[in-house]
Image (cartoon, rainbow, N blue to C red):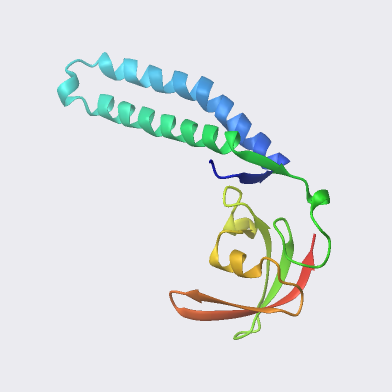
Length: 158
């Protein structure tokens, strides 16, 4: 059985648009690069041809991955999630580092939507897993390569 992949409606639509673009324009561009490289003569020593084939392989791998994600996707509606103060996917969690006192804020999302620069933390990450089901006032400990980190949950928002 395939793994269910939870996505927001916005992310689902973004992935659909990317897949459409790669299937049409992306494949057309790669086909043109391969044709251009073939026109340069001997394929056995043609670096442009090898590079174009490699780019085609990467494109097809991305298309296959997007198809798998979309085929197994389930749209998450935040309104359908409990609002009982516990941490769930799509919760925004404010954390205090117990060692340094610094405050960080993350929104928990699926691995496919994770983006550390936008403070979108995957529920499959060590911290994401530790936070699920907890509530404000709870403490969580995670093991990282540098040792152990402890956070206190300051606030949970939906």
